[in-house]
Image 1 (cartoon, protein in one colour):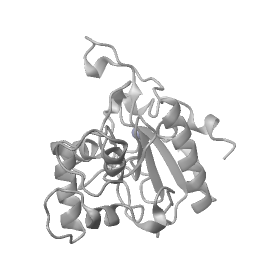
Image 2: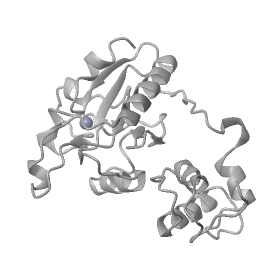
Image 3: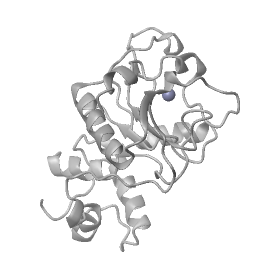
Length: 232
Ligand SMILES: [Zn+2]
């Protein structure tokens, strides 16, 4: 890596890596959104100056030596009995950032993103809320579960209103492989947890976290997680 990346830096794989580390869509273009995420990261990590420029000090914080590329699973302090798969109810092929999902969930009254992990279109595994904190993704089953979602789950039909779009398994090959890898890691961390889809739980009425519009809950995550992951 070169030493400094900032707004207007040429599009590159290095910028994409920085974006992945910041849970952004890794398009490799250092624009305003990336700059804002760098500023937030610098503030959170006590870096000085907070200038939105990725230099050696920020790089070192973004890519600690002991976890350069491998993704490790943090064990939850909670007892975990269920790993629940969701989709974000996003039309096929449409990207969605962690920041956007977080904002949408906040708009629904949650204090942050409801899921613990989100699988991006390119297979990036993005972190949602901390696994020690109870999620907001499956009403009645949040206390002892981990919520995993992939970006997608709806057909993409230009001209059809969003609410009329039908459920569809839109997972890219990269998402399928990342999801399986993540589930294998989660099963190692929580060997007794069962893997199911959101639709395999009958929603109760206590309203502690149903993220998708109600008309899609019965199909979320748009494929049979029980069947697909029965070998795990
Ligand atoms: Zn769901």
